[in-house]
Length: 171
Image 1: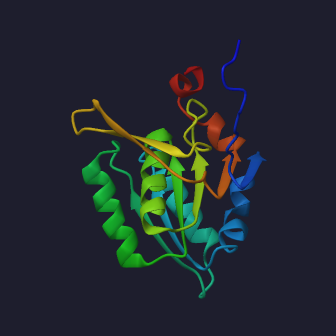
Image 2: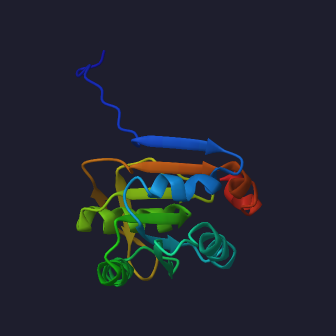
């Protein structure tokens, strides 16, 4: 017998999925403004940085890209916070796996900025959740952060997901 029958459901404000939907990234980010900061996972940085330069090629566009270090620690969060603050974007976008996305969720939440996420693996619930798991530099669990809302936009390009290492698809 359930003691509490009240249930809740949190979800992103907008969820877009399909092959090639990253081509709609600029259209979606413009809903928040013209200054866009991207934190990108190391596995996809070079390829996606080139794509972003192509997508955001108007003189009115202003983007900044940064390479995620690979671990979500208090130190990495602080480093990215400083990068984002110095760029002063209208929206923050995370492209990568769960740790990359968890990092930008903390940053966007702390700076009260809109958040878009583009997962590159299917092995995590980070894209849609309103929480981040923080680790210590040695990789052990440190704590969690919970947020009042889920990401504003989740853009799942199934072509990118298919390019992920097989071990991520199996997870």
